[in-house]
Length: 198
Image 1 (cartoon, rainbow, N blue to C red):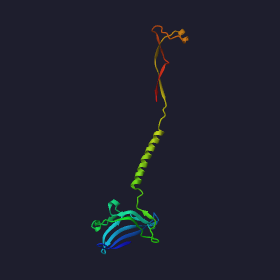
Image 2 (cartoon, rainbow, N blue to C red; image 1 turned 90 degrees about the horizontal axis):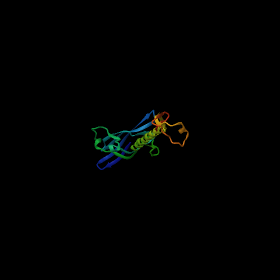
Image 3 (cartoon, rainbow, N blue to C red; image 1 turned 30 degrees about the horizontal axis):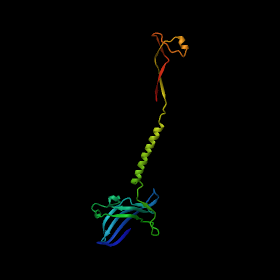
Image 4 (cartoon, one colour; image 1 turned 90 degrees about the vertical axis):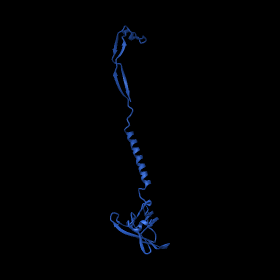
């Protein structure tokens, strides 16, 4: 596919030539075309040759990309064919590039396969943030599932308590205060104190 611009300044007969190939792939069960090479011609001779990378689409589609360039800032889809070639002296950039080499109907481009990657930086950032939020949610659910109820556990121990010995008649009268008779004491074994653990 050749684009002929004629004479532009000192460039006599400027031509941009796109070398396209088509191949059949069994996995996709259809023909695909690819841009194999780009050549710049002027003064009736080839001046620069670039190998194209990742520029392909199904044969019934067209290929579209915002920038097809030899510059690194535009992802360098065009690479100089050799170190000794004059291609290094050229910088080629196509803006809003669209090409279709085969199955052209009524002079219009078919549906375009875009060069935009499915994993652009914005999409990757969104996936990373979603993963972080998912991990936080999973940790919160894990903590809720393994949360123990605030059960009270009692550990009771017998404690010796000493009281002054009382007379039997003093036990019958509830209003009578406790009286001590001498220094005699006895141990009350059933008195307990408790520790509460929460």
